[in-house]
Amino acid sequence: MTDADLAADLAKAAGRILLEVRDSGLLDGAALGKTGDLTANQFLVRALRHHRPEDGLLSEESRDTEERLHKSRVWIIDPVDGTREYGEERSDWAVHVALAVDGVAALGVVALPGLGGGLVLRSDKIGEIPHHDGPPRLVISRTRPAAEALSVAERLGGALLPMGSAGAKAMAVVRGEAEIYLHSGGQYEWDSCAPAAVAAAYGLHCSRIDGSPLIYNQKETYMPDLLICKKEWKEPVLDALGI
Image (cartoon, rainbow, N blue to C red):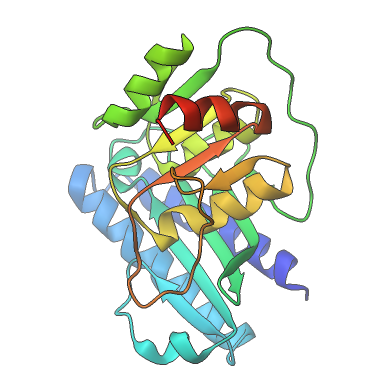
């Protein structure tokens, strides 16, 4: 099985598990989010250890070790990106499965199980992004919109689209629902690795908000900011940020 097919199969299966946990009706709110996180993580970690035992692994829900720092290939996963949204039984949450090779997001799968049919987007199977005329649409956090994103939207005359998880927001750009996703409120590698891999495969610009590259499998997994946008909006955004 190829790495891409493995990632897609695991993301889809984790999504099904999460829906089963949610639809059981036994939990809600924070308890549902925590249980979903732990259940999906256990499945993904065990499956990756079985199928790719020589690779490194970084997961939001597992204790990190320095072992991965000595690996060229490292799987970076987020079992539930948007735990709050999942716990609230919204649709804007995701499952991230990515493979970083020598620090680059080489392969990614983002599953959106809460959407009808359980949409799965892959970096190895891409389509065209619908064209949009007019001012840009910016996806922002529905609970903690970044000041920089609000400033850029004002300068560019853009519309704001509040949304949940990082994966859902990034895939909104991939799906043609928005043109810009700018985040500056702090994230970790598992929040952006899979979305960045998919977005880059679709021809989108992906970087830090100062234009520098996204580098993964670092000892410090904190990644403060992220810019994913259509390439024609890269310079206007950086100019609006004063960079």
